[in-house]
Image 1 (spheres, helix red, strand yellow):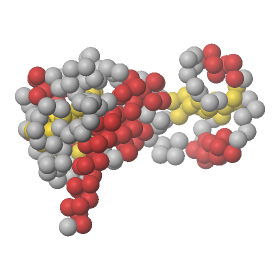
Image 2 (tube, helix red, strand yellow; image 1 turned 180 degrees about the vertical axis):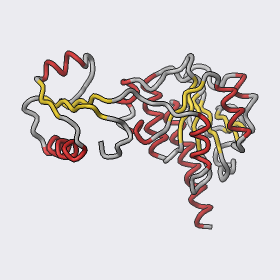
Image 3 (cartoon, helix red, strand yellow; image 1 turned 45 degrees about the vertical axis):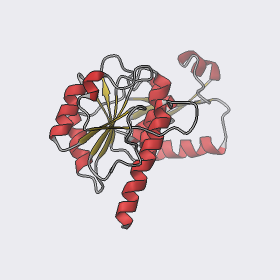
Image 4 (tube, one colour; image 1 turned 180 degrees about the horizontal axis):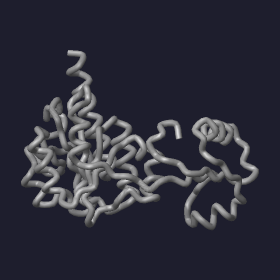
Length: 235
């Protein structure tokens, strides 16, 4: 509601909900000219089965993906080196939602998803992202490999992540335009994506567990990218 990136047609609030947070939301809705309706809680439960709606529901426009070229050009115009995350066929909606939140937290310029054999930005994904999807442009492409070829032609370094490679995220120089590719939960990076990578890097493990959840791996890697870039600015 504050950002205005997502069109909201109407707001539903459970009858009797009068918290300070609710009053703040009502005030923002009034400022934005968003109609507000008070509904019995069973009505909200009916339209949102198996969902913890907390008594407040926004009826929005459908999620809009951005064009890949638009995403690339926008990121290249940023004041810092471009940083795009690509998900190599992540199918779990919870993981994708957490990944979107992580990418938005670190001010990533956008996310690229394949259309087939991949989760999309569904209602569950949006909820799992806790609203972060409103801050992160997402491009959905027919063929991820060809999309990476396009980004490569625009000057991006294609960097994959895998646990078996000797070069770590701490050794790699992230001060360049980068597409960071994260593999699927079960298979990691697919062969067609691996062959397009300029470099594959790993997160070194110091314990008995070899691999991390994709959103956690993204958080560790993006944190190192931001650290290096901030250090370069100060230097």
